[in-house]
Image (cartoon, rainbow, N blue to C red; front, top):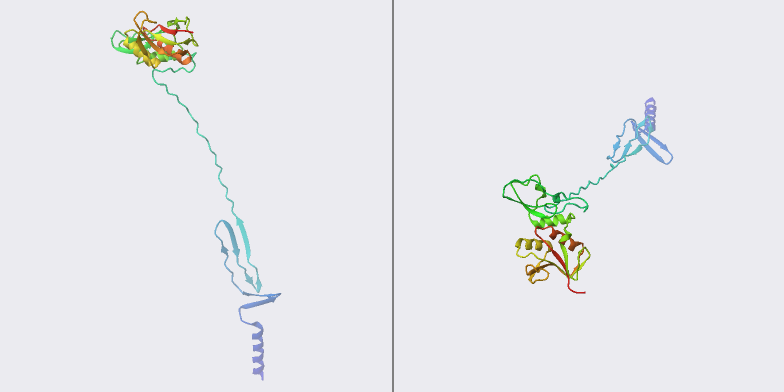
Length: 261
């Protein structure tokens, strides 16, 4: 009888306690079961928007809910500054051309070349002497090498651009009367180079055209006249050409001719 009672009591105890090592908690609408001891490992999300989840821990029949924390990493773009590079402009002047932008200034190339170049017969080039461009010879162009030009026309064009001119070489014929000035109308501008082939070549280089014909008028002394400018008004371009021609050695006169009203 005592053995039977012991067996009944043992069975009742087993029924009340359930499986060893577990605890059941019942309440409300759900049932939570947790192990007596142990910790669930946390989970770490990839970097960027960082999310960390920590598993719950149950101790002595208590269950804690998992906790979640979120942190956000802000990214700042570096400031960008843009600096435009400075611009430098360099002007280049070819030899034998005027370099003075202000016509009131003196072009160093057209300052009078007055040096002593020696007794040698070597041709040095053409240089302006204050009145016209003349051919120079000697042993060396020093100290005036920067004032020499390769041709009479190059010297004359450059120095006319620097406001040098010999207007006393301009004359009138027919109905045109001196003084001949800028703005004067001419039926043609004539010159009388005669047999000087180099002078004709220089006129051709300056005027761009040169028409020579036999005839006394207006060149009565040599029987040939050459026309450099056609009929029209002596504007700035035409006047500059006449001034350049007046700086050639042994040039002139330059005759503005008007044949009729």
